[in-house]
Length: 157
Image (cartoon, rainbow, N blue to C red; front, side, top):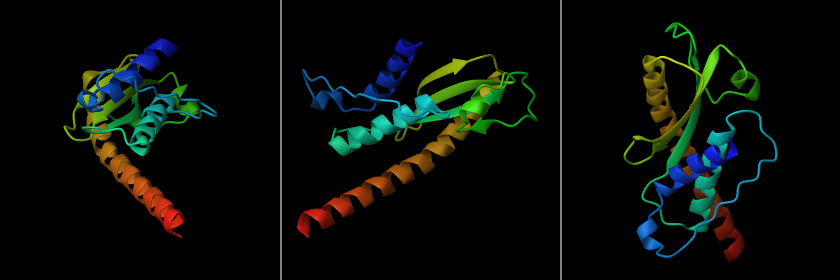
């Protein structure tokens, strides 16, 4: 349910925030879904990560989320789908795995799953999420650099 998703997102973020720098402090992240077309939890974690970066919250690493769909039948020839649409997520032949990985330690921080799958499928998803997280971190870096450059031009123009 919704509480489970809140807990997943909160745990992923808390694992990467330098909480020792914020004693007796509550850091509240509010996420509002305007439109959802799949990979909602992944999008929420990654958006919250960008929001924390933009707010200047000190972090030890970045929690990067990835959604993948794995075949429920365990057939290794069936492809694993990353960043699925809502339509793809509703396919009963696939189970969903959402992984939050640590950008520095490169391990899994947290996971949430729905449906049944084979261990090999889960491990393939972890490997794919690790590769995808590097691309997502590069995108986040580029987005933040462009934002800072735009703001500097506006501020000093």
